[in-house]
Amino acid sequence: MLADAGKAIDGFVFGGLAEFGDRLGPINWQLPPYKTFDRADLTAFFDLLPRALDGLRLRHVLEARHPSFLCAEYLELARRQRIATVFTDSPKYPSFADVTSDFIYACLMRSEAQIDKGYSAADLDAWARRTRTWAQGAEPNDLPRVTNTVVDATANAAAREVHVYFIGAAKEHNPAVAGALLERLR
Image (tube, rainbow, N blue to C red; front, side, top):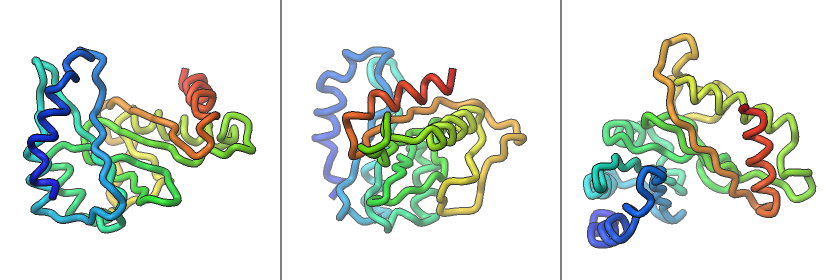
Protein backbone atom coordinates (compact mmCIF):
# COMPACT_ATOMS: atom_id res chain seq x y z
CA MET A 1 0.00 0.00 0.00
CA LEU A 2 1.25 3.45 -0.91
CA ALA A 3 -0.35 4.78 2.27
CA ASP A 4 2.25 2.81 4.26
CA ALA A 5 5.26 4.40 2.53
CA GLY A 6 5.84 7.22 5.04
CA LYS A 7 9.06 5.84 6.52
CA ALA A 8 10.52 5.07 3.09
CA ILE A 9 9.55 8.51 1.76
CA ASP A 10 11.13 10.25 4.73
CA GLY A 11 14.29 8.16 4.42
CA PHE A 12 14.62 9.05 0.75
CA VAL A 13 13.73 12.74 0.95
CA PHE A 14 15.47 13.57 4.21
CA GLY A 15 18.41 11.20 3.61
CA GLY A 16 20.49 13.52 1.46
CA LEU A 17 18.38 15.28 -1.18
CA ALA A 18 19.08 18.61 0.52
CA GLU A 19 22.67 18.32 -0.75
CA PHE A 20 21.35 19.19 -4.23
CA GLY A 21 20.29 22.60 -2.97
CA ASP A 22 18.72 24.76 -5.66
CA ARG A 23 19.72 22.16 -8.29
CA LEU A 24 17.12 19.72 -6.96
CA GLY A 25 14.50 19.15 -9.63
CA PRO A 26 11.15 17.40 -9.44
CA ILE A 27 11.02 14.05 -7.66
CA ASN A 28 9.58 11.31 -9.87
CA TRP A 29 7.60 8.63 -8.01
CA GLN A 30 7.32 5.77 -10.49
CA LEU A 31 4.63 3.20 -9.79
CA PRO A 32 4.95 -0.41 -10.95
CA PRO A 33 2.76 -1.46 -13.90
CA TYR A 34 0.56 -3.62 -11.65
CA LYS A 35 -0.34 -0.74 -9.27
CA THR A 36 -3.91 0.25 -10.06
CA PHE A 37 -5.58 3.55 -9.25
CA ASP A 38 -7.00 3.51 -5.73
CA ARG A 39 -8.18 6.98 -4.72
CA ALA A 40 -7.93 6.49 -0.95
CA ASP A 41 -4.47 4.90 -1.12
CA LEU A 42 -3.14 7.51 -3.53
CA THR A 43 -4.59 10.38 -1.50
CA ALA A 44 -2.83 9.03 1.61
CA PHE A 45 0.42 8.71 -0.37
CA PHE A 46 0.18 12.28 -1.69
CA ASP A 47 -0.48 13.50 1.86
CA LEU A 48 2.80 11.86 2.97
CA LEU A 49 4.92 13.72 0.41
CA PRO A 50 6.92 16.55 2.01
CA ARG A 51 6.34 19.90 0.30
CA ALA A 52 9.56 21.56 1.45
CA LEU A 53 13.10 20.61 2.38
CA ASP A 54 15.47 23.03 4.10
CA GLY A 55 13.44 25.96 2.81
CA LEU A 56 13.27 24.63 -0.77
CA ARG A 57 9.93 23.86 -2.37
CA LEU A 58 9.70 20.19 -3.33
CA ARG A 59 7.90 19.32 -6.55
CA HIS A 60 6.53 15.82 -6.99
CA VAL A 61 5.69 13.87 -10.13
CA LEU A 62 3.75 10.63 -10.44
CA GLU A 63 4.59 8.17 -13.18
CA ALA A 64 1.51 5.95 -13.37
CA ARG A 65 2.07 2.79 -15.40
CA HIS A 66 -1.38 1.19 -15.18
CA PRO A 67 -4.28 2.14 -17.50
CA SER A 68 -6.64 2.59 -14.53
CA PHE A 69 -5.06 6.04 -14.04
CA LEU A 70 -6.62 7.17 -17.33
CA CYS A 71 -9.60 8.70 -15.55
CA ALA A 72 -10.93 12.11 -14.57
CA GLU A 73 -10.92 11.09 -10.89
CA TYR A 74 -7.13 10.67 -10.92
CA LEU A 75 -6.64 13.99 -12.74
CA GLU A 76 -8.81 15.82 -10.22
CA LEU A 77 -6.84 14.35 -7.31
CA ALA A 78 -3.44 15.13 -8.85
CA ARG A 79 -4.49 18.70 -9.68
CA ARG A 80 -5.85 19.29 -6.18
CA GLN A 81 -2.58 18.01 -4.68
CA ARG A 82 -0.47 19.88 -7.31
CA ILE A 83 1.29 16.66 -8.33
CA ALA A 84 2.53 16.60 -11.91
CA THR A 85 1.85 13.53 -14.02
CA VAL A 86 4.57 12.13 -16.26
CA PHE A 87 3.74 12.19 -19.95
CA THR A 88 5.50 8.98 -20.99
CA ASP A 89 5.10 8.94 -24.77
CA SER A 90 5.34 5.19 -24.50
CA PRO A 91 3.73 2.38 -26.46
CA LYS A 92 3.92 0.25 -23.31
CA TYR A 93 2.56 2.54 -20.58
CA PRO A 94 -0.38 4.98 -20.41
CA SER A 95 0.50 8.22 -22.17
CA PHE A 96 -1.73 11.17 -21.41
CA ALA A 97 -0.86 14.84 -21.56
CA ASP A 98 -3.47 16.27 -19.20
CA VAL A 99 -1.67 18.92 -17.14
CA THR A 100 -1.98 18.42 -13.37
CA SER A 101 0.59 20.86 -11.95
CA ASP A 102 2.37 24.14 -12.65
CA PHE A 103 5.24 22.36 -14.44
CA ILE A 104 5.54 19.65 -17.07
CA TYR A 105 7.52 16.41 -16.86
CA ALA A 106 7.86 14.30 -20.01
CA CYS A 107 9.77 11.05 -20.47
CA LEU A 108 10.11 10.35 -24.17
CA MET A 109 10.55 6.63 -24.74
CA ARG A 110 10.43 6.17 -28.51
CA SER A 111 14.05 6.52 -29.57
CA GLU A 112 15.03 4.06 -32.28
CA ALA A 113 18.48 2.55 -32.83
CA GLN A 114 18.26 2.71 -36.62
CA ILE A 115 17.63 6.50 -36.63
CA ASP A 116 20.56 8.86 -36.22
CA LYS A 117 20.08 10.54 -32.81
CA GLY A 118 17.16 8.18 -32.09
CA TYR A 119 14.39 10.50 -33.34
CA SER A 120 13.72 11.81 -36.83
CA ALA A 121 14.13 15.51 -37.54
CA ALA A 122 10.36 15.81 -37.96
CA ASP A 123 9.74 14.19 -34.57
CA LEU A 124 12.29 16.47 -32.92
CA ASP A 125 10.66 19.50 -34.53
CA ALA A 126 7.30 18.35 -33.16
CA TRP A 127 8.75 17.88 -29.65
CA ALA A 128 10.37 21.32 -29.79
CA ARG A 129 6.98 22.83 -30.73
CA ARG A 130 5.22 20.93 -27.93
CA THR A 131 7.89 21.95 -25.40
CA ARG A 132 7.51 25.62 -26.36
CA THR A 133 3.73 25.35 -26.13
CA TRP A 134 3.96 23.86 -22.64
CA ALA A 135 6.52 26.47 -21.57
CA GLN A 136 4.17 29.27 -22.70
CA GLY A 137 1.48 27.90 -20.38
CA ALA A 138 -0.61 26.33 -23.13
CA GLU A 139 -1.08 22.68 -24.05
CA PRO A 140 -0.24 20.87 -27.30
CA ASN A 141 -3.41 19.76 -29.05
CA ASP A 142 -1.85 16.71 -30.74
CA LEU A 143 -1.15 14.53 -27.69
CA PRO A 144 -3.47 11.93 -26.11
CA ARG A 145 -5.55 13.09 -23.17
CA VAL A 146 -8.08 11.76 -20.71
CA THR A 147 -10.25 14.88 -20.88
CA ASN A 148 -10.96 17.34 -23.67
CA THR A 149 -9.92 20.36 -21.61
CA VAL A 150 -6.97 22.04 -23.31
CA VAL A 151 -5.42 25.37 -22.33
CA ASP A 152 -5.20 27.45 -25.50
CA ALA A 153 -2.05 29.47 -26.22
CA THR A 154 -4.20 32.61 -26.43
CA ALA A 155 -5.67 32.10 -22.94
CA ASN A 156 -2.89 34.11 -21.20
CA ALA A 157 -1.81 31.09 -19.15
CA ALA A 158 1.28 31.48 -16.97
CA ALA A 159 4.62 30.34 -18.32
CA ARG A 160 5.85 27.13 -16.78
CA GLU A 161 8.95 25.01 -16.38
CA VAL A 162 9.20 21.99 -18.68
CA HIS A 163 11.38 18.94 -17.99
CA VAL A 164 11.93 16.62 -20.97
CA TYR A 165 13.91 13.40 -20.60
CA PHE A 166 14.80 10.88 -23.28
CA ILE A 167 14.84 7.40 -21.79
CA GLY A 168 13.95 5.31 -24.81
CA ALA A 169 15.01 1.83 -25.76
CA ALA A 170 17.91 3.07 -27.92
CA LYS A 171 19.69 4.48 -24.87
CA GLU A 172 22.92 5.09 -26.77
CA HIS A 173 21.11 7.88 -28.68
CA ASN A 174 19.52 9.64 -25.72
CA PRO A 175 22.32 12.17 -25.03
CA ALA A 176 22.47 13.13 -28.73
CA VAL A 177 18.70 13.47 -29.08
CA ALA A 178 18.54 15.61 -25.93
CA GLY A 179 21.21 17.88 -27.41
CA ALA A 180 19.33 18.05 -30.72
CA LEU A 181 16.14 19.09 -28.92
CA LEU A 182 18.03 21.77 -26.98
CA GLU A 183 19.42 23.14 -30.25
CA ARG A 184 15.90 23.44 -31.65
CA LEU A 185 14.74 25.24 -28.50
CA ARG A 186 17.50 27.85 -28.61
